[in-house]
Amino acid sequence: MNQSVAAGEQEKHAVLPVPTGDEFARQEFVKSLKYHLSTRVAPGIRDSYEKRRAPEFQSRAGRLPQNRREVREAMSADPYFRMWSALERGSQEMLWNSVQVSIERQLPDLVAAAQAAAESPAAQQLGSLTLDPSVATPGYVSAVDIHLMPGGYYTEVCPGDVAAGALYDRGVYVYANGRMGPRNADPGDTAAAFFRQRFPDLAPRRVLDLGCTVGNSTLAWVDAFPDAEVHGIDTCAPVLRYAHARAESLGQRVHYAQQNAERTNFPDGHFDVVMSCLFVHETSRKALSRILREAWRLLAPGGVMLHTETPPYGALPPFDAFMFDWDTRNNNEPFWAASHELDPRAECEAAGFPRDAVFEASPLSHYSTTQSKPKRVFKGGEVGGGWRWYVWGARKPG
Ligand SMILES: C[S@@+](CC[C@H](N)C(=O)[O-])C[C@H]1O[C@@H](n2cnc3c(N)ncnc32)[C@H](O)[C@@H]1O
Image (cartoon, rainbow, N blue to C red; front, side, top):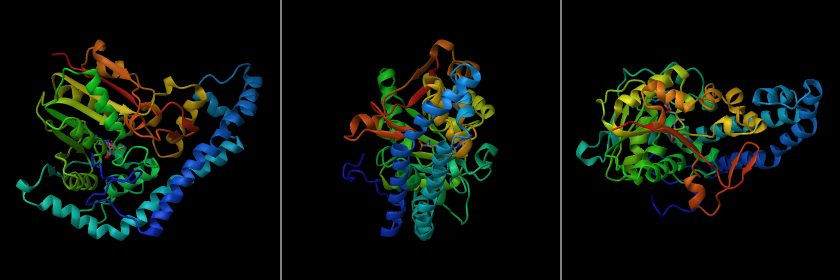
């Protein structure tokens, strides 16, 4: 990690869109609005639930709501919840708009920077970029503008387009208010630290990141295992072009390729680690089964598959699960609910892993533990005691 990054700033690199003063002010406004909604407005939803809607439900049903669906039944017409929900949705639309304007202004320069990285002689590149136009964008990636991000990860409006990558990189930083670190790498850093602690005997020679987008988590694994050969795959060319130029500019060696994680072209047993971050919740259930079977095929004996996501609903009280589920219905995250309710043991077993090789954990966010302002804000208020990610996976016997 570049120690020269100023506190609270996103790390600069050759393809990061740099906002003008006005664009920066607009992005800062969105950050402040989101913070305000989470810390000042959202807590009132719980009040309204506890003081009015839960008692109403109880007088009708003879008991309190038992799960997120019943909380939703009690809350969906609540005016305070509806006001917050409309503002939250508006803030998400404003977030992407505030970044998009800045990217459109700089797009020719960003495309040229990415092209320069991709076209420089192979010997001068640290890693590589392999695009394959025959790789189709899966329907579950293109059907909606995922999390309201205009055009998703795949849309291209000019040759060599990188706008989707720039939009994700800068947008996630603004969305998270910088709390995922200067490289948005917190899930990847946390997963790598967890892996090291859980599997101290394993020094991975090859690591594969599924659904790598711009490499936020891929780079975390390069940092954690500098001797490993690290690969990142995604189906979408614009984010991969961006990822490659970004990694080269940051002096990180990564091999990026346009491939579908459901069926890759790597040989059997090629990797010691097959991992993903914030990827599972954006794939369909059918695709996930195929992806887990592919991970099983790709792992060397003794290798580890691990996926990092936000906490499963089962770990949350019904009201919190209801709030967490907001994204499914309001933020174009059609697989959010199902992914937060899957059974890792059953999924891994169906893919070939023995049941007793499966693990689940809730490691404290790496960034929470290393920064002086660890508080993570999520819907419904600040997370006391630091944010925790959810890591699940399995080790292949051998
Ligand atoms: C939320 S992003 C992942 C974020 C990234 N891992 C990180 O840590 O910042 C999901 C990514 O998965 C990609 N994706 C979805 N389905 C895929 C598949 N079957 N194969 C490869 N990539 C896929 C999408 O194109 C998108 O870039």
